[in-house]
Length: 185
Image 1: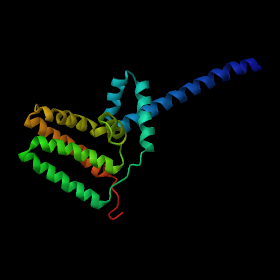
Image 2 (image 1 turned 60 degrees about the vertical axis):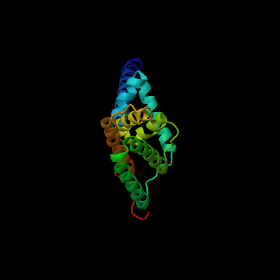
Image 3 (image 1 turned 180 degrees about the vertical axis):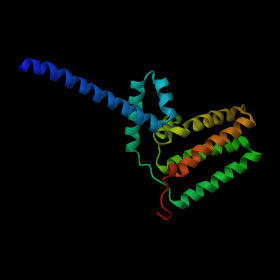
Image 4 (image 1 turned 45 degrees about the vertical axis):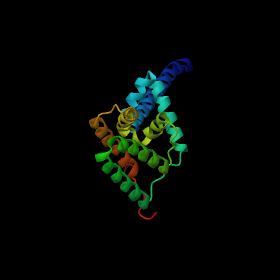
């Protein structure tokens, strides 16, 4: 076989293998991002107008998250937050609007204590999405109701649902997503 014939066979084979490897890499990256971000993956695809732009956005979130100093809470701090949450839930009986506002404040405080930046709501959502993508819809729904509070347009049922939504994220943040720090650490 001549060198030209060998090259005519080898080059297309190498190109096909490279394309298969690239395709496989893209599929694996997509699966990893879907698994990590959960429903937030699809939401970001929709908002970004396509998978490629969304995946760039999600990878940027991961890089930003890696730079954060997210830390588990010592058990004494977790206990204090749990007591504060109980007080907020009790407050709901007499002052539901204040309780929803206090739940929002408590979740933000817990985020800050864990090491998340807490500047603006959208930034908080982006930072939380990396580890808590499955509970972000709870946070968004609760935040929407909390925003209605000052105008006194939220119903008691909406406020009750907001408390349930806040609790979902609060419990996940408090437990460190199942990776709590050892007692006394």
